[in-house]
Image (cartoon, rainbow, N blue to C red; front, side, top):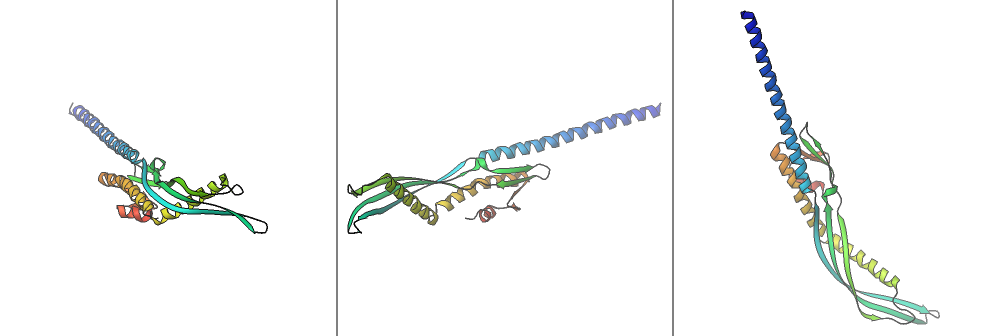
Amino acid sequence: MLKRILVGAGIVVAIILAFKYCEFKKDDDSTIDYNTNLIQQQILNVGKLVVTEGHFSEVITYKNQEKYLMDMISFEKKALVVVNANVTVAYDLHKMKYDIDEKNKTITILNIPKEEITINPDIQFYDVEQSKLNPFTGDDYNKINKSVKANLAKKIEKSTLKSNAQNRLISELSKILIMTNSMGWKLQYNGKTIESESEFNEDLKL
């Protein structure tokens, strides 16, 4: 009789322990799912279009000559060209690629999209001089537009616009770093673990 009671008690204890183990595993899995969902939501929040705007101005003089009769006669056209341009440098973080390793609690940023530079120049012509034998044509306007954009591109490279845009990018990416640190996860990029905002700055240096 006593033997049966002990066996029965053992079975009850085993069932309780098994139940507790399953309950523990369920809570652990739920925590992993919760953390993963939270991380994915934070990345979605960061995944937006980061835009930095700038304004540039320049004044150029355009000249062109058409010569005839062994260069004895020439007809010149010229104009004063005033340019005001709005320029944007954008990072579309919707295009960022990443991997979430739940087992090792690691987020790996696989790819950060390159900056997209958009130049929208407003070109105004003043003091236009031309002749019937050398009038302004569409080809002239195309040359001027090409020259304007080339000059603006040089100004952009010498300005702080791209570095300012990069600082905004790093600020957004740092939100992921803060979140992973707070949850005990790791953030990796470019083959190494990122532990501070300055390390992002080094890897993304222009």
